[in-house]
Image (tube, rainbow, N blue to C red; front, side, top):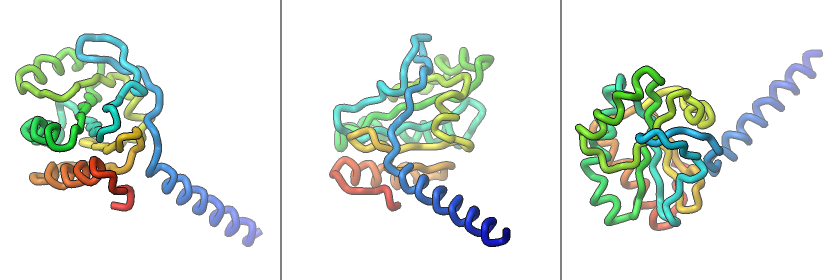
Length: 174
């Protein structure tokens, strides 16, 4: 019996480690969320013509998220010129507060594409438990890097990763 338990635990750990390794090149799931103007948007349509993509999950109530989005927005034009990166900011605010997202985004003059996930379907599908949570996708739509939390200067580290992805480097081991 003891050997069976040990074997089961070892098998479970092996499968877990294997699936985590496989997750490094996971594609985005097909989930319907909303645009700021209320249109349905399927996450399979997140595309950037072979160039890198950043997807950042955020919320109005999350101060570090807003700082991260401001930092991304401040650099976005230069980043696009240098790498072609496209940024999607996915608000996970619930249905009660999604009406406040558009005025907030307009007030900040964010240039990135802002999407709404009021039911948390995309967040759950991506196993996002803590925000801010940023995903980096390569030109083929593979998730090659993820990061949670934000601190001042992190945007430069993220940009270094974007540069590497734009140049075709494998960053999935970072």
